[in-house]
Length: 232
Ligand SMILES: Nc1ncnc2c1ncn2[C@@H]1O[C@H](COP(=O)(O)OP(=O)(O)OP(=O)(O)O)[C@@H](O)[C@H]1O
Ligand SMILES: [Mg+2]
Image: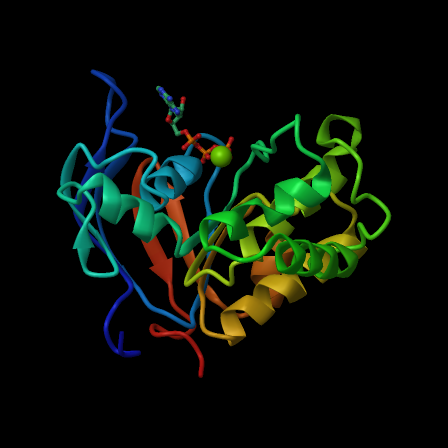
């Protein structure tokens, strides 16, 4: 896909849960590869809902969402699986599998890509070392702190080098030093070509790194563009 072609296109997207009032209202937006976006807004503004649309956990109630040129409301389940493989997600509540070790959790996404067990474990160990969890390979997630779980979730999301990386409050449970390190990691992902979207309450990041800021307010989205098509 060329740099000029958007990776993600929202066209007049509205989202409501059941019969409830719209949570996201008339969102039109294009997001590009090799770009970095902060998604901000008060609690309840709809950040996680927008992330859910992006990883296709839910579909728009109306309007059109295209990811990698595919209309997510019309794709087959095979296409959905294929598209999901290109997306890494750090969920707000981590979504780790408690019956698997930390190493197995992080290596899991490589299983579907057909990597050998040896290679999967090698890559998972490397990335866990990097996020400071080199001594936690054989531990089960429910014995970890919130910040450690968060780092496991991040390692799992980036191990496949996804084209789109979604991170929902990825620094909510870690101290400033780790938060900066994690931001460095997200920055690295964006530099090697991913479209990175980080939902955060952490104003310091948004003010320090001059990236595009997508602001949700009462379901409406506005954009403070530092550069409209990412830096290169
Ligand atoms: N599964 C659901 N069913 C019904 N309403 C929901 C559901 N999930 C979220 N909502 C509602 O949608 C609105 C937006 O919620 P969302 O979780 O997207 O906000 P958020 O910006 O991520 O908040 P936070 O900063 O607290 O994580 C809220 O009013 C919430 O109550
Ligand atoms: Mg949220």
